[in-house]
Amino acid sequence: MKRLPLELTVNGEPYSLSVEPNRTLLQVLRDDLDLTGAKEGCGEGVCGSCTVLKDGNPVRACLTLALEAAGCHITTVEGLAEDGVLDPLQQSFIDHGAVQCGFCTSGMLMTAKGLLLRDPKPGKNEILSALSGHVCRCTGYAKIAEAVEAAADTSAKER
Ligand code: FES
Ligand code: FES
Image (cartoon, rainbow, N blue to C red; front, side, top):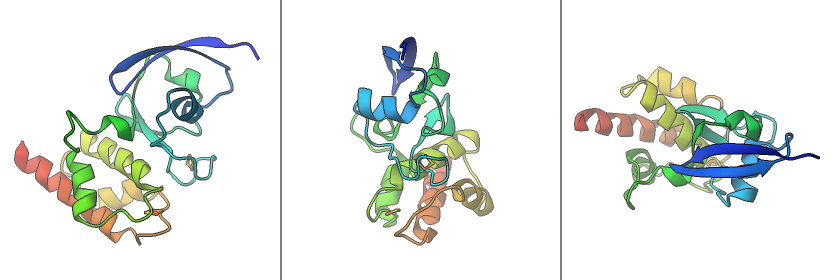
């Protein structure tokens, strides 16, 4: 299949790639850029484990063609920490025991990050609604929701 040029920014780094039109953003991130934080669970938009931010908005990378990300800023879980310091959400997930096997974690974090970018102090219902499109087989969800709520509190106090 003929490849097409693709320019995008991932975690602040510009990339010029050449990709087949049917490749997904998830494939390009994981296979071409070696950013394996976004996971392939279902591969059909159901589980949320592949979620990344596209211009600040959470998207399912398994359902996004790589070419749809042309000219966009993509953030993956690898881009959350800054200068070796974890994002408050990452720290909160650790502090609240919100990670078990970790397969769902990067997707949960990226959706939560998108939520806090939109609304720095979401209520519990907003948090649960944002996370409702994610599947976790381990934690029972309560600790994840608590972790997001606590991170929102911390971020709001730091403002
Ligand atoms: S792998 Fe994308 S939603 Fe499940
Ligand atoms: S921590 Fe294992 S799937 Fe969520």
